Amino acid sequence: MKKILSSMSVMLRQVREDAMLFIALFAPLLITLAFFFLLPFVFKTFSFELTRYYLLFDFLSILMTPYMFSYISIMIVLTERDDKTLFQLIVSPLGRSGYLLSRLVVPVLIAFVYSLILQFFFPLSSTPYCLKALMAFMSSLYCLLIALLVINCSKNKVEGMAFVKLSSILLLFVFLPFFSKAKSLILLCFIPSFVMGKIGGGESLWYLLPFFFFSFLYGAFLYNWFKKRSI
Image 1 (cartoon, rainbow, N blue to C red):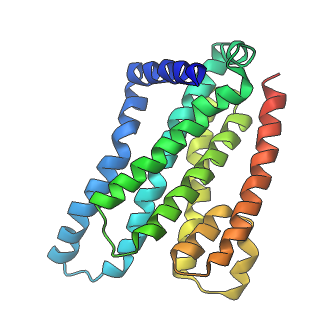
Image 2 (image 1 turned 90 degrees about the vertical axis):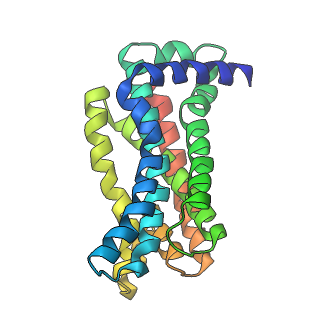
C-alpha cells in the first residue's frame, strides 16, 4: 500500500506541473455546474420543454468524470513511456499490478466518488440516486477499459491525444437507447456503453450480465496486451 501511495504522490506532482491535466481535474465540476444552473435558465428563457432530457445531461455529467480522470491517467502513462520510466517502475518493487493500480484503477475509483458527490449536490433529474450510483460505477469501469485501450494503441503521447478524441465515439452509444427502441439494437449488447444506456433508461437489470461479461472479457484482453507491450 505504501508503494502505491508513493506512486500516486508522484502522479499528483505530475498533474500539478501540467496545466492541462490540472484543469481536467475540475472539468467534471464545471460541466456539472453548467448543466445544473444554465440549462434550467436557458430552457425557461426560451420556453423549451426539455426537462425530459435532464436525465441525459445527468448521465453525461456522470460519464465525463471518469472520462476526464482516465484522460489524465493516459497522459501520465504515455509520458512515462516516452521518458522510458514506465519499464523502470514496472520492474521496481511497485510491480506491474501496483503500477496499474496507482495509474489507472485508483484514479477511476476517485472519479466514482467524485461523481457521487456531484450528483448528490447538483442533480438535474429526479432519477433515484441508487441508479445514478450504478451508472457512475459502470462508467468508471468502462472508462478504465478505454484508458487501457488508448494506452495499448498509442505509440506516444501525441497519438494518445488523438486516440482519446476518437474514443469519445464509444461513449455516444450510451445515448442510443434513449432515441431508438428498435429491438434489433439488442445486437449491440457487446458494447458496454450501449448497455449502460439501456439500464439508465429504465430497462431490466438483467442487462448487467452482458455488461460485466464483456467488460471483464475486454479487460482481460487489454491487460494481457499491456503486459506484452510493457515487456
